[in-house]
Structures are given as structure tokens and as C-alpha cells.
Image 1 (cartoon, helix red, strand yellow):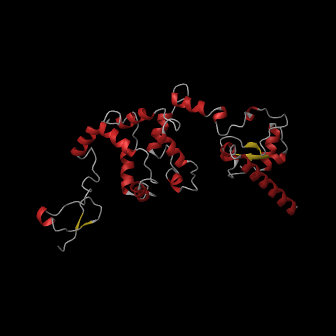
Image 2 (spheres, helix red, strand yellow):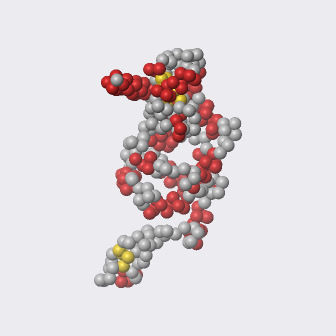
Length: 299
């Protein structure tokens, strides 16, 4: 056969002629491509299958329970097939992969209120923690320590997205609006677990210690003026902030309010520097010493 036949799903891949085609006819699709692009809304077969499978879980369906038991504990490190699939999918996003884009478009805006499958899953996993479930503990361990510097996809997936330009974020914001620990048990449990000594930033309650009388508004304004009304970490000017710049104690000692121990920060940076304190002490002391050295050489 001389004419090249391409798969009818639109993938652009040619169908290779094989001897048995002269008996059974030339196929329209490559194997597995006949359902590509079809949804329950456009294909009766998929709609019937979706209706048949909707609501099935390992708790109420023996085949799902058997499959879950079979797959439990498998990882890319222990099973070559999972490792191969992980490697194949690595780096794919909805921006560079049509399949991911179609899936993202299909599930956009779905919530537990509008989708039965999500509602069932939300009810099923409510209250699960890494302490009670090995799968969650394993997933948490894999993701621990990841940052946008070590995993580019973390930042690229959400960069620039807000509830104004992304339907999924808008739906989640609407879902979370008004929730408090008084109205939602999960929020109450998280708040209880992360309060006091359970919080990784807990330092014995020193945040409740009072400031000295020397740390007044006049001193704060003097420090802001010295720093030219700009955050000394990110550089944002005070005029672009919703509140005045915070004045931060470099050594975290509220009793030490001398100017060389104070620096101006925006609200976001002031919150950020509450962790990894040793690093930020050295960082801000280096900034102030560098400035003093520059002033001494220019005067």
C-alpha cells in the first residue's frame, strides 16, 4: 500500500499497514485513539459508562477494593512501570500538552456542590492526616522540602493566576469564603494542631512579650525615613503598600530598640522572616553594615 493513512483522531500519526488489514479492513484509528476527545456529553457510550461507574469506591465495589489492595504501596522506586510512566509525564503541563489541557478544561470549575464524584471523594478523605494514613504520609514525605527553586513546575503552574482570571481559583475562593474554625471541623482541627507548641515557628511564646516604651511611633517613622520608605528585603515602596512599613527587630529582641537593630519591611516580608531566623539576622546585619561602609566612604 502506497497511500499514507493517518489516524482519524487528529493526532497526526500514520497508521502502519499490516498484513491482516487486507482481511479485516484498514482501521480508522490507532489502537486506543478511538475515544480521544470524546466526552459524556458527545458520546452515548462514554455517558453510559460514566453513569455506570459513578459512585463506585473500594468500600462498595469488590473490584475497586481488589485493585486498591493490589496497588497499595507501589511507588516509582519499587515498580518499573510506575517509574516509566512518571518519567513520561514529567514536565507536562496544560500549556505544553494537549491531553493535560483537555483534562484541565474538562474539570475546570467543578466543586463538591456541582459534581457527585468530587463530593464523594471529599467526604471520603475528610479528616485524614499523615499520622493516620500511610499514603498521605508517603506523599507528604515526597513533597517535603520542595520549593520553586528546586521544582520549577510549582511556580509556573500558578504564576499570575488570581480569582479574577482563573475559574478554579475563583471557585475555591468562593467555597472557602466565610469558613472559620467555629463553622468547619477541619479548620478547627488544623488550628488546634498548629497552635502553640504544635507550630513549627513556636519559640516559647516570645511573641506575647511587650515592646519597650522606646519603640514608639516616632522611632518607627525615623527608621522608615532612614530606609527611604522602602522594604529592605523586596524593595517595594511604602506608597504601594496597603499599610505603613513594619519596623522589624533584626535580632528578634523586643527590648533592643536601637536604630542599628531596626529595619523597615513590608507586611509580607515581615511575616516571612519569622522562620529561619539565624539566616535573616545575618542577612539584615550585612545590609546595614554595607550601608554604613558605603556612607563612610562617600562622606
